[in-house]
Amino acid sequence: MYKVVIGLEVHCEVKTNSKNFSYAKNTYSEYPNENVDTVDIGLPGVLPIANKGAFEKSLKMALALNCKTPDIVMFDRKNYYYPDLPKGYQITQETKPVGVNGYVMINVGGEDKKIYINNIHLEEDTASLDHFGTYSLIDYNRAGVPLLETVTEPCINSAEEALTFLETLKGIFLYTDVSEARTDRGQMRCDVNVNLKNEADEYITPKVEMKNINSFNNVKLAIESEVKRQIECLENGNTSELIQETRRFDEQTLKTYRMRSKADAVDYKYYIEPNIPPIKIDDELIKNIKSEIPMLQFERIEKYMKDYGLSRYDSEILVKDKKVSDYFEETIKLGVNAKSSSNFITTIILGYLNKNELSIDTIYLTPKMLVELINMVDAGEISSKQSKEVFFKCVEDKKEPKTVVKELGLTQITDDKTIRDIAVKLLDERPDLIEDHRKGKNTFDYFVGQIMKQTRGKANPTLTRDIINEEMNKR
Ligand code: MN
Image (cartoon, rainbow, N blue to C red; front, side):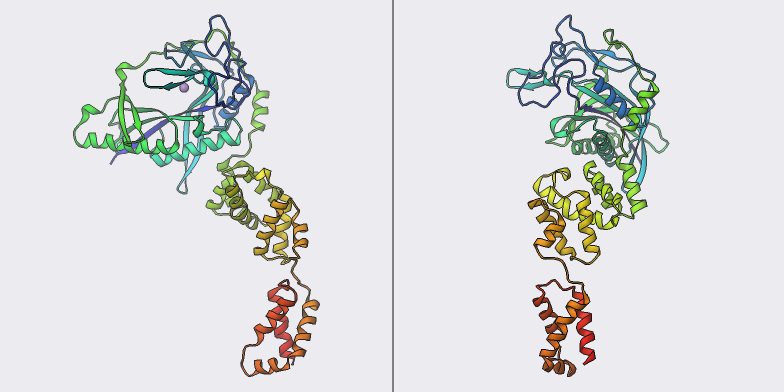
């Protein structure tokens, strides 16, 4: 038996107004070289300035990942040459990163697992290269964008765990508002390290690294393919193929290919960045930033299951988008039945939002209005089928549920006397049908139908049947 050992290094761009060390804008742009400053293209003699917002967000993420934070954070230079790195070095944090020794809780198939974080550090993104037939073009829009790198311990043991960790991490980025974490815009990218251990917990294959995988699904496929290759090499005695190296995952063939062996490994010659003074972190700052971290997905799911009796499935749907989760919690605060609210949100509201590509905070129905609507159903004033109709009318016409119910004339008749008066009159008119009923012919449904017709379907069905039954038995 083999044990799969996986470590991840996840790069994620931080959401800020400007770049990490310059005044250039940090926005997604369709046009190359639009957001560029002298610092970003590495002109000689210009000095970097640390971005306060990026630094505070990195600290927020470190705290959300339960990391220990140092008293002083320092920046370092990582020296290497590549055309996408105009300065010839990347500013990063090697000696005193913003967070160390943290952890993240994940849930895989109903089982909780702790994923240990070695460190999280703030650095800068590189420019992007576009390769053409005989030439390449450089776009500096991305150069200097604040980038947070999260490094896990090698404690992930399957492709599924890796995928769940990435989804959980993305959720934390979104909940803390540190990043939009959009993989489709390359904002979140992943390096994967994979090797195998035997039953005695000894490494039996060297570590293979796969760099810059830009979708979670590809991370899963790359791990599966590399694990398969390493096992096959072991079992076929092909051990010369097992060396510490960097491999590339190919989306077309779903296989990994050799890029460079450890022998060509780069020596980065790290040293402290002399142009940015160390940044002191005090207790006050930690306290303030901690207070800005909301309850995260993992804890919310536990709470919904334990306190509100929801299923894991429904809880996971509710917390997927923080806005939806906050909306749900708002309705709970207003005193609605948790299951009714969860059902209405996960089926009707999310169905509508997905279909129309809308966000829950843009629709007219506020949590308070949803509570009114659910309470009308619970009180038997309208049916649950009608509540769906009211919801659509409410969001489309921008009207309160109560107004819609009134306008559509949906309010159920639950008043005994109103229904009884109609019933008595109907029974008086048709003694022949009462006679038929006694002889065993079903004329009961005729009377129900007539009452529904006369009230235009508004009579409460259960009450109507009870009343007809009582009145027939009296005769
Ligand atoms: Mn990095």
